[in-house]
Length: 180
Image 1 (tube, rainbow, N blue to C red):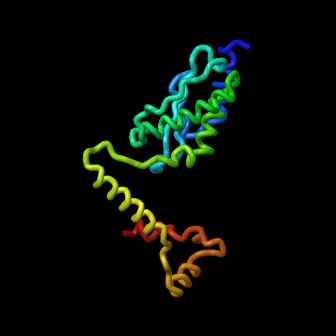
Image 2 (tube, rainbow, N blue to C red):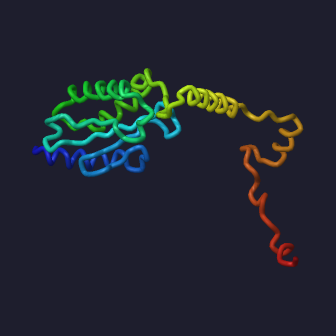
């Protein structure tokens, strides 16, 4: 098979696999991005893979220069690219974009283990204080609201055995409303 036919087949496969996945973006017929992790996650990163003309016989270009990655140090970016390059060498000659994205997803913690969030601003100490405050406040939000026995009974009386409110609990009597 010619390289272009391999690329077309892989492109079709990628589109069907990642259909509806908001982490995957097709920037062009040979350029793809995948966000590993959620948007608010401090260890999330974006991998961009572009295919040269002779791909998959030659290695794809792997980039982490997206604006999304501006909080990641160059050393960590280089480390991630090196680990992905090892996967490229193992899969050379085959369609590997999906494999690279899945490798990044499966090994996210290992790839980002040396990541220390930093700010591009001059005052580095203030930003570290802000990040600790954010993590402490998110821990506080995880506590469940404690209900008294009376509150639990009242809630149980309003709901059925599944914990759902009965049908029509918030309906408005149309006749009473129209007479006003």
